[in-house]
Image (tube, helix red, strand yellow):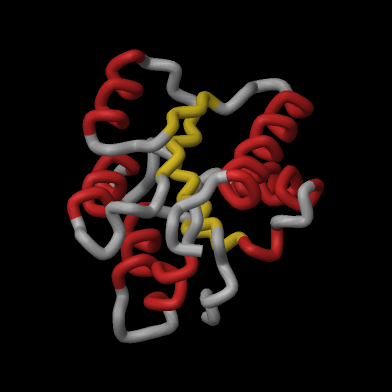
Length: 146
């Protein structure tokens, strides 16, 4: 699995939501820069596994789009690991979830999330929101590492 060209790691267990995110990013010509992890364990392996190609993923990531409700390892645990490790704490993490719960929002920011976006239910709004996220984090945001 060659991850070196990826700039976005999408951590999403719902195949329909993952496909909609990729479709929205295609509208911005950014879909080729996406790697998808289907659960929290896979996400951490992709980010932290130094034995494979994943080191290249960590080096090139401009943003992680992270769902909270994940199998194996929760989004909160993934977020906490990313933000407590020196190698990864500067990677922006956008929580992209269906949960509008105030407690989830507060916990995400407490753990170091850079942004919290509730997935719009309506298809066109979902596509527009993700396209805007992709444009901002890949095209407009500056990290100081470019």
